[in-house]
Image (cartoon, rainbow, N blue to C red; front, side, top):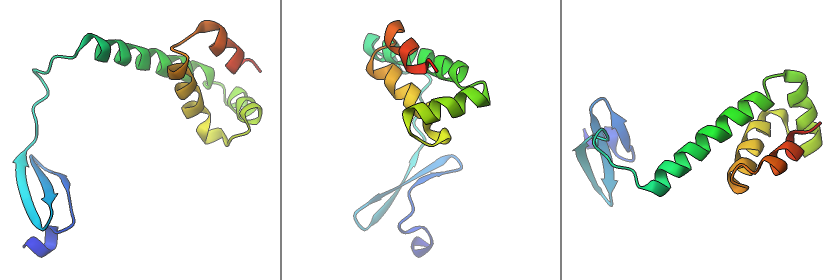
Length: 103
């Protein structure tokens, strides 16, 4: 049986498979319901949610998404990622973001 799962790690049903050297360890999936986020983690999560909403709005129109791809010099499939990363780097600065998505 170990040869079937050797080299595999990850979740299988309600079990987590981990590889430590030549040993395979089975463990329970960590319960995240009672975790307490720090203030910094909560701020970062909120910033990410804002970035997602901003990026979704910026690329909602397929024509605008193509225009932004041309402006950035990247494939259309990477425009969303570019907007998200820029939003996170500038911490949502309105002036920077409005200049970024202006076509």
